[in-house]
Amino acid sequence: MSLVECLVASFILAPIPLAPLAPAQNLPTKTETTPQRAFDVATIRPMQADDPTAAHIASSTRNGYFKAVNVNLKALLEVAYEIPDIRMLGGPKWIDTQKFYVEANASPELEQYIANQSPAEGKQTKRDMLAALLADRFKVSVHTESREMPIYALVAAKDGPRLTEASPDLTTDAGDQITIAPGNDSLTILAYELSWRLERPVVDQTGLQDKQKLTLRWNDNAGPSLFTAIQEQLGLKLEPTKGPVPVLVIDRAEPPTAN
Image 1 (cartoon, rainbow, N blue to C red):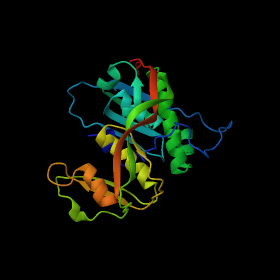
Image 2: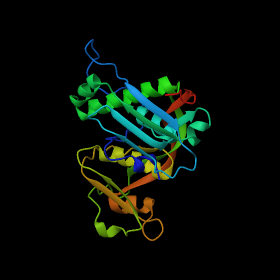
Image 3: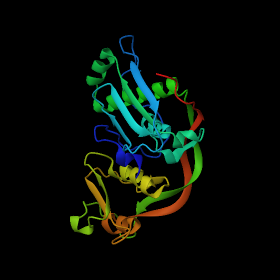
């Protein structure tokens, strides 16, 4: 199961298309009255390898609280830099295997500042805060670059796209499902979600700007496979190819400093 599937609903983490990472646009310019985007207090401790606690991350765009349980450093980097771990390179081996408990709170001033922001602004502020925490406590240093990698191109099938919500009778209880809410760039988000299931970057090359509710259902064991379901239900297909993909290169990471 991917990290996206274990994130709690309170964290509004919209998937990002395969494009160069850059700060969010149209955010307030930092001024002398803007509080520093950093947590006031934070507790970080390693967890035992056999700890059965379900991995999860809880955060909100409306306050300054953050909590992560039984997750590795890559999972934290994913939230901070909004990039899936399949596009992370470098770093020591323990960033994949060692799990951590992280709990952090903002100052009352920053808490109020976040509460007054829009959801998009609040999400960016929380990303900045987590990135600062990782740099401080894990000594994380990263940079981005483009690498040629195997990808799947999401394109229109021969008979053209059929972007209507799938009927519930197209699946069984044993199947899997992706549902994307209306009001978003549905196909970009679909490509992001598919990358988790396929463990390969998926790039939306349909040229469409679909923003309606989209549901994809499949069952690899007793029904349509994921590749078949995409074509039958959405009139799209996945073509294996290669292309430039933005990646996050982890230049440095150290075990966290004591609380």
